[in-house]
Length: 85
Image 1 (tube, rainbow, N blue to C red):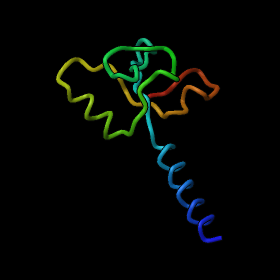
Image 2 (image 1 turned 60 degrees about the horizontal axis):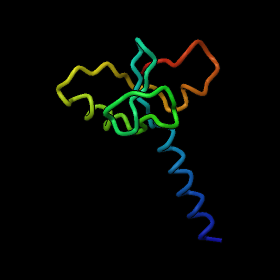
Image 3 (image 1 turned 180 degrees about the vertical axis):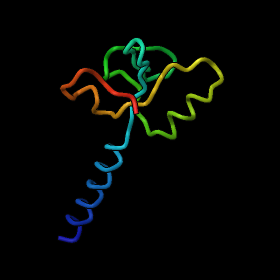
């Protein structure tokens, strides 16, 4: 029984971490940063996914950076479009 409680807590922690992940989107074009962080994509399944501090590190590359973080589930929501945060 104790292992089940531990597994449940671990899974809850993983879900909590996943909820704070972001994708990077160019708000002007709607393009997403690709998984390899060197090109763009329109497919969320192939887009970069990480934490905000990782996104900030990518933005410090020194080149023009049009991407803004959006919640990972923003593209799944039914509304006028994803909102940058």
